[in-house]
Image 1: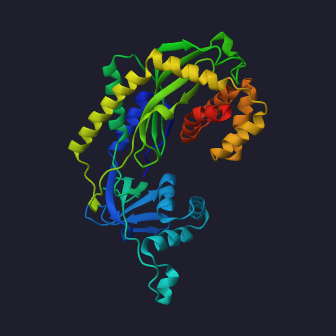
Image 2 (image 1 turned 45 degrees about the vertical axis):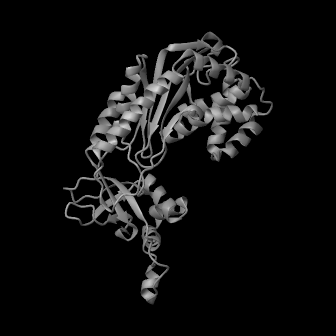
Image 3 (image 1 turned 60 degrees about the horizontal axis):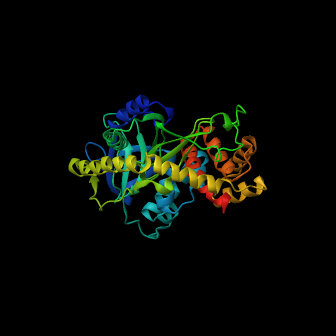
Length: 383
C-alpha cells in the first residue's frame, strides 16, 4: 500500500492534508494472539477483512518495535531477522504467539501454550485491494484512541478561543507521533545573561546582537502508543532558531481506557466528543498557564540561574549526561561538537547544544527527543 506516513518540517496545510488522507484508511480491530500469524514478514490478521477473514499487513518499523516489546523479543534482533532472515522472523513471532514452534509441531510436542492476550491491531488499509495494508501498531486492548486530526483541531480551537495570537512554526509526523510547534510572536523577552557568550554554531553570529527568547506551545500526540498526548511550553531562541520543549510542566493525557471486546473497532463518537471537549479546555488552560509574561519571566530566571554554572570539561559533562539518557555514541559526538561550536561553556551551553543538534536531525523522533531532553540536560549540567 502506497501511503505517506511521515513528514519533516511540514507546513500546517501539508500536515492537515496528509492527516486527512490517512484518516480515510484507518482500520482497527481487537484480535486474540492466535489470530495473528506471520508469513514471509507479513502479518495475517484474522477477522479484519470485510467478510471476517484475514487482512494482510506489512508492519512498520514502529509496529515491529511493538511486537518485540509485547512478545519479549529483543527489538534489534527482530529487525535483523526481518532484514536478513525473514523465515526466522516468522518462526520467532509465530512461536511466541501460538506457544508452539515448528520443531514442536514436527516432534508432536504441545509447546508452552498459546498467548491468551488480546491486542489492538491498528492499520492503514484499502479493504477493496488485494495488496497488503500497513501494520501501524500492536497495542494493548485498553488503548484509548486519540486521533491526530481530532487532537490538532481541539488544540487549535482552545488556543484560538484564548485570544492569544499564535503561528504554526513547524509540524512533524512520524510512525510514532505527530508534533506541532506554535509561536506566540508577541511574547518576547530579553535574556542577555541566559545567552551570554553564545553564538550561532552555523553562522558565528553572537547572541549579544539579539538576546531574545520567545515562548510558545509544543503539542504532541501518538496514535500508536509511541508517546502521551501532551501540550506544554516551548522556548525559542531567534538568534539560532534553537527550541526547547519543557515537558516537566506540560499537560499530558495517557492513552488508557477500558478493555475492548474482540472484533472490528468502531470508535464511539460520543466518547470521542467528550474527550475532545476536555482537550479543548486543556488547551485553553495551557495558553493561560504558559503564554503569559509571569511564567516566561520565572522560567527565564530559572534557566539563567541553572545555566550560569561553568562547565570545566565539556567532554566529561556531555558524556555523563548522554550516558544517563542512553544516547548512542554518534549523538553524543554531535552534541559535543555543538557545545564547542556554540562557545558558551556553561550549563546553558549544554542545553543549547542539545537544541542545536536537534535542528540537524532528519528523523523528527530524534529531534523531538533532543528538544524534550534539553531542559533535563540543563538541570543535570548544573547539578
